[in-house]
Image (cartoon, rainbow, N blue to C red; front, side, top):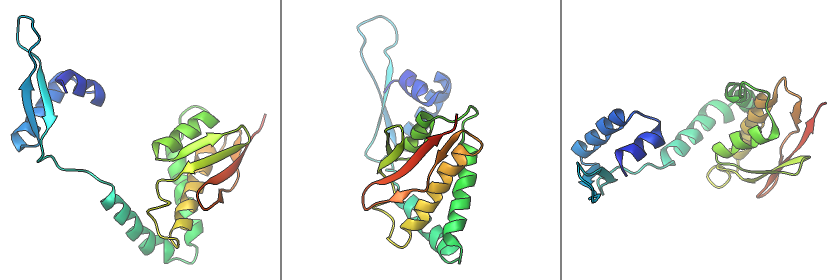
Length: 179
């Protein structure tokens, strides 16, 4: 990638992107080359990851999630209610400054790894980033937190989203919009 492409992707000034890319080269995580342009002047620099570049996965985050669920939520008598309250706080923090719309809610959930469809009356969650990763005893806590997230995003708005109907592969929630 060129410095300009990296800067654009990360919304950085080109000099900042170049500084960080050069640091990655020095650390052995990236390599620098040039691309002949056929024009006069200095050819553009290209950067690429090396085989030494660290890989990033969600394994640590999932493990951390499981530990926190076990230690601070599942062990409490009101674990599901606690998870939902945490989700509500999360949702109120993520809420856009403008009134939420169904499209905004779908986009927010998609950013978090959900597949979301709506038919005007129902939100259908076709993919959940946790369903295959969390144990069956922890999944209801995660679902309660996501219900709270939806609640928090819509509090004070004309949109109401019913409680999630959790299915074996797909979840549903009714949508109503007050006029």
